[in-house]
Image 1 (tube, rainbow, N blue to C red):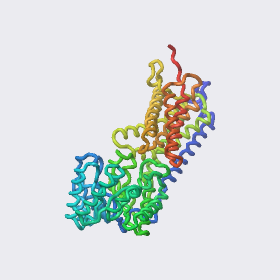
Image 2: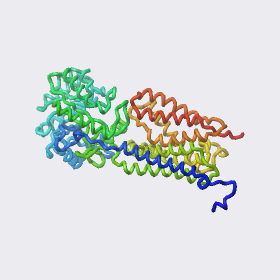
Image 3: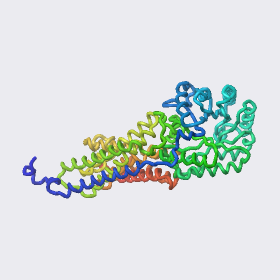
Length: 556
C-alpha cells in the first residue's frame, strides 16, 4: 500500500519517525558485536608450556577401561572382544609405558597378553567386594596371569577403594593382601583415597608400596584447577611422612573435562589439560610415579556419577582421538565458529521478529521494550552455543536427551515469541490459558506457543531445582538454556504486566518452589560456585515472573 493510501489514523513508524528505525538497528549492531566479542573471549585458546600428552615423553601409566558407547561393566553379561582391546592398547602404547586395570571381568583378563604384544606394562587390579567367592575367583585368575605374563605385569593392586565403600574390614583386607603376596612374585599394593590410608595404617604393614588416590576435584573441600598440582604434591608429602619406608605411588589423579562445578573446581577442557600438564611436570621434577585417570572417557560412569563421571579421559570415547594433541592450542569450544554463527543468527531472528511485528501496529514502542528485545537477543546469541555444547555432554539416556533438548528448544523459541509479545503489547500468558477451562483459553497461536514454552521451562526448571534440594551431588546446573528462556519471560512480565486479575495458584506454587530451592542451593553449594549462583539467580527471576502473573477470573 502506498503512503497516500494509508488510513489517516494509521502511522507507519518506519516512514514518519526515523528514530524508531535507527534505534533497533543500533541495538542490533550492539547485540551482534557483543555476541562476537564474548565468543572471541571464551574461545581464546590456551597454549601450555608442557603438552599434557606428548608421544616424545610417554606417560608412566594410565588407568584403562575398554568400554565404549552403551557398553558397561554394570551389566555382568558385557564382554569386550580382544580386537577392541587390542586397538585401544595399540593406541595407548604410543603415549604411555603402562596401563592400570581394576579387575579381570568383562574381558579385561585379556589385557596382559595383548599389552605385551605392543610393549605395554600392566599394573594388574584385583576387584574386591563383599562377596568372598567372587574375591577368591578374582585372586585365582590374577595369580595365574602373573605367572603366565611375568614380563608384563609389574605389580598387583589387591582391592580398589574397598575400605572407602565399606565392603571389607581392615583386618580382612590385610589378610587378603598377605595371601596374594604369598602367591605372586611381583610387588603387591592396595589403592584407596589418601585419607583412608591414614585411617587404616595397618594396611601399610601388609603392602610392598603405598598407592594413594588424590583427586582435587572430589576432595571434601574441592580444589581449584590452578591449585590442583600443589595440592597433589602437598598430600604426597604428607603421606610420605606418615609412611616413610615405602614408595608412594599416586594411583589416580587427574581432572574432568566436562560436568558441574564443585565450589571453585570447574571441569573444562583447558582446566583438564592444565592440571594434567602441571602434575606431570611436578612428577618429573620431584621424581615420583603417577598413574593418570584415565585413558578414555567412560560414558557408563555418568549413570553413577553424573556428567562429570564420564569425562576424565585423555582420549574421546567415541572418536578415540586425543583431546589435546601435542603442539596444538587447547580450546574449551573447538567448534566456536559454528556456535558463534548460530548465535548471531538467533539474535537476528529475535530482532527480525520484533520489527516484523511492529509493522502491523499503529504505535512506536517504548525504548525500554527495544532494550528488552536487545537483552534477550544478546543473551540468547551468546548462550546458544554454550547451551548446545552442554546438552551434548550432559544428555545421557532417552530421559536426559528429552529433558535438555526440550529446555534448549524453549530457550531458542522463547526470545522470539517474547519479542512478538513485547511489540504487540500482550502480557505473559498463564497456565490456565493453555490447560484451564475452555472458555478461558486463548485462541491465539502465538499466545499458546509462548505459554507452552513457559510451561516447559517451568516444569523442567522445577525438576532441576528440586533435584538440587534433595539429591544435588551429581546434578548439572542448567544455567545457559534456562537463562535463554527465563530472561525474555521476566522482561515481558515487567513491561507488559496485566494491571488487574487474580494470582493463579499454579504459578504461585512454582514461584515458591523456585525461591526456596534457590536459597537452599546457594547455601549448600557455597559462594565459589558461579554455576550455582548463576542458576539460582535465574531460578529467582523465574519465581518472581510466576509470582507476578495475573489471570482474568472467569465469571461463574
